[in-house]
Image 1 (tube, one colour):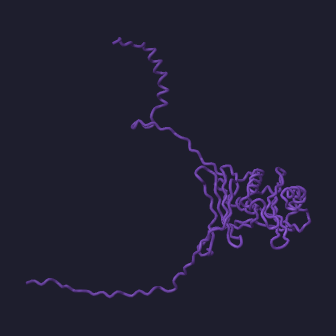
Image 2 (cartoon, rainbow, N blue to C red):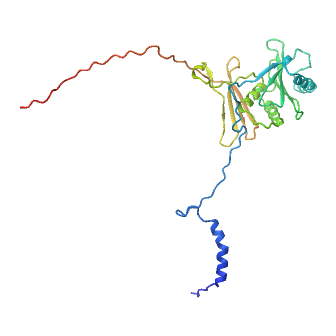
Image 3 (cartoon, rainbow, N blue to C red):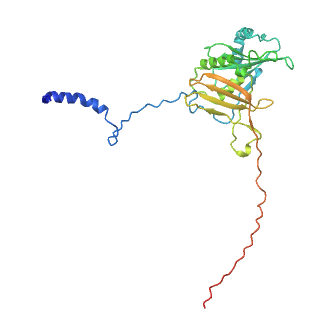
Length: 298
C-alpha cells in the first residue's frame, strides 16, 4: 500500500475555497431530508381574451343602424370606399353596382372592433332571390376594404358564410388591423363575427332573477380556456329564425380564429313550479298511552 501523502496547508485551503461555492449551490433546501428542490417557472397559458375583458352590463347584441341614420363621418367613409367595394364584389360575382340594382345597406355597430366601419349590403328581389354581403372599411386608413360574401340570389357562395374559410380569414385580417389598446371583449367579438357572416345575433344570458327565466331557453354564453391556452367561445343566437342557433368559435393563444361552427342550438325545456297557495293539511296520528304503573310489592 503506497504511503499517504499530506498536502501543504496552503494548498489544501485553496482547494477547499474553490470547492465550497460549488457545493454551496447544491446544498439541499431541506437539510433534514436531504432532498434537493428545484424551482420550475410557471408557464401561463396564452389567452386571447385577458381577464377583465368581459362586456359590462347584460346587453349582448349587435346594433344595426339604417343608412339614413348613420353619422356624416361614416357616410363619407362609405362613399370614399364605394369604388373598392364595387371592385371586390366583382371578384366575388355579387353583381353589385353603386346605387343601382336595388342594393341597400345598413351599418353594423361592433364595439369589439371600433376601428372599422361595418356595413351589410342586401338586395331583395323576392323569395329565393336575395343577395347579401358584408363590407369592412378601416377607419384609420391602415388596412384595406374587405368583402364577406353571404348569399348570391338565395345561394351561398363556396360554403355557408358562418363556417367559410374565407370568412374566417377576413375576420382575422380585420382583427389584426385594429391595433386597439384595449383588451377585446370575448362575447362581443363572437357576436361581431356572427353579424359579419349574415346573422343579427342576440346572445342568451342567464337572468338576474330565476323568476325572469323564459321557457324554453337556450344555453347561456360561455368561454372555455383549454389547458394549452387559447379560448373556445359558445353562445346561442336566440334571435335566429325559426329556432336559436349555436355558434362555437375556437381561438388560439394569440387571438387568431381557427374554426367556427354553426348549428341548431339545444333548448332547455322546463316548467316553472308555482308555490303552494295553501298549507298542506296534517292529519294527527292518534297516540295510545299505556300506564304500566308501579310494580306491586308482595
